[in-house]
Image 1 (cartoon, rainbow, N blue to C red):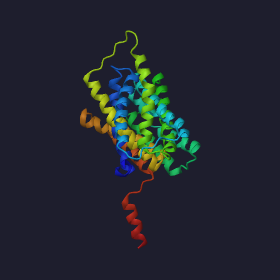
Image 2: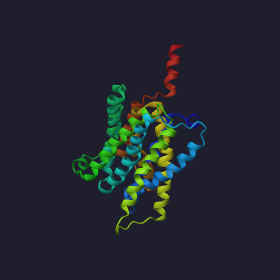
Image 3: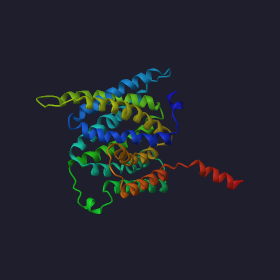
Image 4: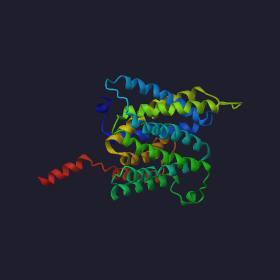
Length: 308
């Protein structure tokens, strides 16, 4: 039911990074007042409630076969528990530039895992698209200046973000395999529940002793937003697209996140768009288009005209 109502997976993949770009912005703010496990637990606690309500509206709910549960548990550990917590930990110690560059390699990692694990064929054209989009993110991150790149220093936070990037690649690749048996809604719901079960004890542990944290109304609103949009809508659309197009195609759209961040900064933070933004953003868009394998309708029209 839900699947048929969703638009083109290419459109969904173009919108998901817009939603997720706010996760890094809000996450950077939230980690100043709340611990990482708590942020992730509340966010996916909200998401799990909504996902279960959506699941219960369906008449064809299936209990996954016993053989699939290890993979579902792995989805919960990687995509919900580990990835998001590591991102929030990493944002405490690393810079936006470093985390952006490291995250840009996600499509490459997904492609490698898909070839090794799922035996998928990844064309040279698609790999070229990945590398072009990575180059675009790189230009944006270093602000078009080699001086910034050469002066970069790496810290433990970068290692944490790198681990998170690899774990997300595992989640995206494993998700394709799981969703050949169950629907994206079922996979997302069960994985979210597994993640929350693991997160709650960790969140309680964070509040031990005399450690003082503060839950402001701004933090509460941000967590609800992340729960509804970044977790429910973002994960459902992402998993639906993986099921339809494969993990390698979906992963390439991940690099649209910094492009959307630039646009939001222009409209909401009054930041100026520089030449390196335009150049890097153009490279990302070209790379995503080439790597996606998507053909514009006009291309098909031209082919038909030539045949006639």
